Image 1 (spheres, rainbow, N blue to C red):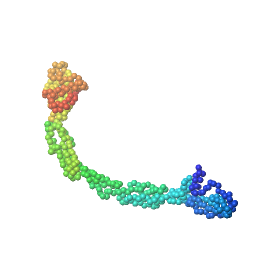
Image 2: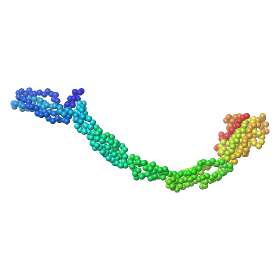
Image 3: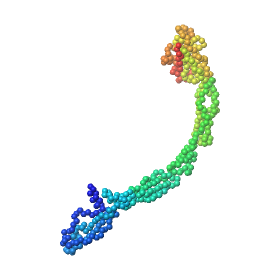
Image 4: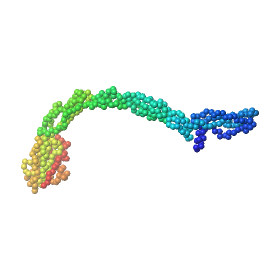
Length: 432
């Protein structure tokens, strides 16, 4: 394989190799042929690893059929070849395995390494300048941008490479000082590459901070208010909230209460103030709740050997309680009976007055029980409050008492959806 490559290399150098046998002609003697002296060598046909040639002629005695060179010898006997300039330049080395005879150092090329690598003029940059030391291998090109321009993509320094190209890429110079024209109307300008950004002051928006986005500002907006009334109505005075616009524009202010006071009955109310800025239509609301309830009473005691039954709905408007006793126990005779309702209204006091009497009278017979309380059989229960059956029966007993004559049927007629057994609160006392 090595021999074949060397033969190919020799052929590429132009060496004339005649594989036929070179020799004198058979008529050499007959034609009295003689060789003349060799002529001088020709110039080398290559700067490196070339070849040169010299020629010689024959002296022929003129005889019939003796007038051609071939009558004396084959033509290749009349020429002589030899190698010349067997050297690589600029540090190159012989490369027998390459298409070219020389392997060149970086920066040179060509078959003899005599040609210098040249990358040509480096690309120009828009809105900037370029300066280069040389376009040959190793030459350096430097880029810079004009005033108010910043370099983005690309390389500020590029070098001519052995592959005839400049390293890196051509940079770009982008305008980066848009803020010089003060484009932001109500904000601070921030320069960006080929752009800018406006950081708006509070209350301003838009690309140039040109839009008023400030709603009215409220001051002294009241918190929610809870009032305990000792009567069915109560007057309450409050301080109206204040509104203003940081940008100095006028405001339109409306409220659902024309004055900052009102006489409220028991119930829940909302005071609302709305300030609107006509210049941009933005509004701000101040709203607070006013809750008016009767003055609460102290909690009633739970009777011993009995149960306290009270309304569990609308209890903040009033409480209505009654007492029942465990079977074989009753309350004593007197002004209070099983039919007595303990009512807490707006005054904050119980009528009848507490405390609820305990079921401390122990009974031996029904007749004895009726002596103390004629309603004993209706208002007594046999069992524990841990029993759902007992609790349900007491809840139904309470509702029957509420809607009976002398009861407080308005508690059910006004709130029929809430006047249900499961909303009756049953509390049982200790058993002794």
